[in-house]
Length: 128
Image 1: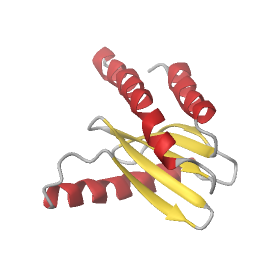
Image 2: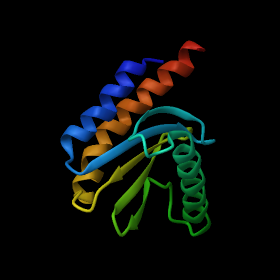
Image 3: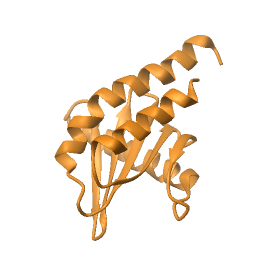
Image 4: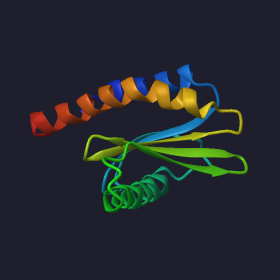
């Protein structure tokens, strides 16, 4: 897998959307693939929690016939955590402060998610 390309995507998203504080990419099972997080954040724990949350949201969407889940957002008093499906086998989590424009985030993530999916799929195709 091209870890530099993955890091570029995460960094590029941070540059496009002000207010992003942390990002991570994880496998759907919660194993961390890459992280750009502050020292106060446990990236492995974040990956596991994001996978669990996204899994529940996917099951809810399926059980209520809402179609394939694209994202879920948890809002807190100091910002939010957005969880995005990356294909069927991965996810990206984006943490943001109170000032982050969530609609701008949703728009900016779409091309980044497609590129991240290609990076991860390339790894699987190579058998690495």
